[in-house]
Length: 89
Image (cartoon, rainbow, N blue to C red; front, top):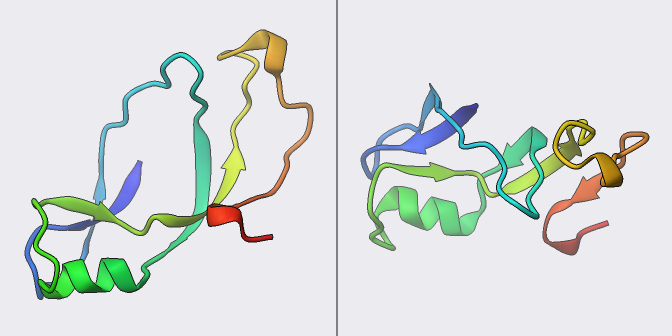
């Protein structure tokens, strides 16, 4: 997956290709169409809130479910549905 990674405070984010673990039981994989950097990310980027680095930022995402037929045949998604992060409609 491609991700915006903070490796040092007060430095630009790096867009990196990262390995992703396969979904575990009761998890699904989603495709992120877009992700936003919010104020909590901004505070981490500026060093206001020290956190262990490197860190993937941009947790406010517009998601798209990937086909689930191979993951959970009895709960397959028949058509794409829209999801909003943090309960936004």
